[in-house]
Length: 148
Image 1 (cartoon, rainbow, N blue to C red):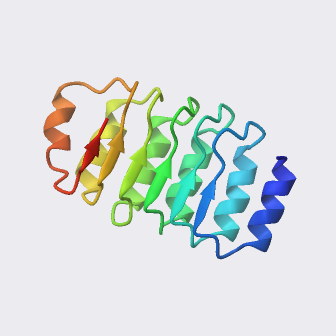
Image 2: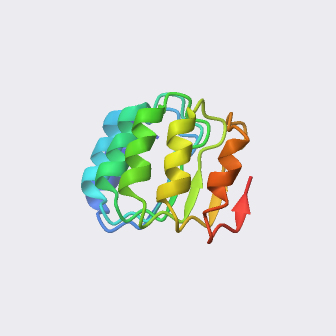
């Protein structure tokens, strides 16, 4: 699937609630900007296993897709800590499921997710370098049902 095809779908399907773009290696930041501009009603988004998406994508998600309850950014190694802080801050009321496994994260964003996103029910940090002190923060997530 090309970036232009993805953008056409986003333009035509503005009321999409769920979008799974996992493993689409042609997906780029510009495509995600277009999706976030057109599909503001998205509640479930997966862009896992994409090595081209950068922190720009995470920032756009955090700033424009404020209805997201499920976000999968697993195995997106160019997503940085600063951009995830924006996600943790802006999606704190809506986010229920966060999958960020196999990403090179810094503890700051993990702490923000644990402190801000109090409605999280599922958190996947597999392969992330989370310190043991992070467990104390995670214990504040009273709705958490799945932790991996």
